[in-house]
Length: 542
Image 1 (tube, rainbow, N blue to C red):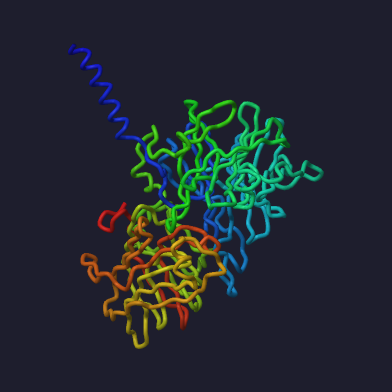
Image 2: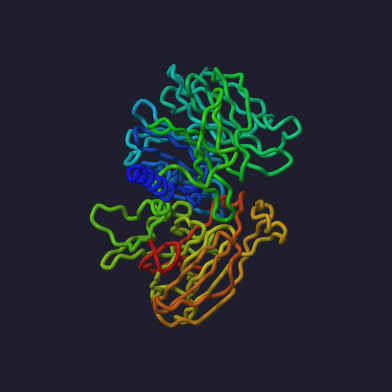
């Protein structure tokens, strides 16, 4: 009896430990949309979309599918033009580069994307995905939501489009479209999988092609006509040119777009994303089984909250990180968690030492923070997060505004504003969108409803050169609160809460924290940020 009890007790303990260490969905509670995931050996890699951010097209890596860290970017600057450089009144908000396709073939990593900002399709490749360098190729036209695919016979293709999906053959090095190669429509309307009466919602797009056991599986995202419900449609064929049979593979909680990945042990998963309000589009890992040659996603049609994988409670720490701006020789000037809002003006920022600090100098005048260059950003994350910074404002010029922002089209910030005669004020500002309350309740609005007005909700005089700023975000309520401190210990709320709002045709990404400094009257002033701390609460940064 004692021996039996010991065995049972050991099994129970193992079960409880397994349950306690189970991974949680979402695997990353932050804006990491349009995921494309592969496994090379025992390491997983995933690409995503960051649109107008620079550097762009992030590559993430993981050893267990649930704990991810940023490993690099496919490009430093997508293109040099007025939109990406925030010049002549132009911007690339909600544009830049979109959904990518990550592949590994014959010892080379490839990642393909496309851009309305450049008018081209882009392919980047490297033998070393974590260190580069990346070789860039680009060609016209723009192939929407393309999936790069290397077939077993040596031929290379892209599958692209929305609703109507097409196949185009590329050169063997994927650098351009192959002259005289295959180019044809392979699916006339993906959305017919919902039924003839449901055609007309979000057109099937976000293609990701896989070949498994001789069959072609094309993952797409779509929505039926009668309701907004992002769903996974899988299209299967014996030949890449078709014919394809299609079925709705997952219709649950707006979780869709992505593709398959297997483990070294032979388990299968789908890495997808879910729309989650103002935090953005966040990755979910969905278990996959196989039935009659079809991948079956989820458990009873649902995405489970727990997964039989290692604990990932601290997984966000590979995606965001605090920074004291102290650098050792050979270190990057900015860790990979940072991205600039549009292309930076490299002549007007620097990381200084003794002590470490980030210096941002104004190079021109701007009307709002959204047109300002050199706003340095990191993702927010859910269910709630906090960012703090200390800023030295001694060298600001009249009209300068510098601080910490919750960045989206509907933004809010706490900042120091320099007035005449050296007077400075703490301010809390938020933008105002031209939308009605019912639109705002829906959480997503279109660009035609937006305007770029803003209001100052608080102004407090400040006489010292060093101030502390903080923004707290709560994604259960989609609200942000703003704080200041004069000593770094005692915090005071300033202004009013920001009701955060995800706008999909303007910005098209989750909220970000940003450090900024811009001039409204004359260029040349500068500020120095001593640190940036981020965590689930302000007093426990990562």
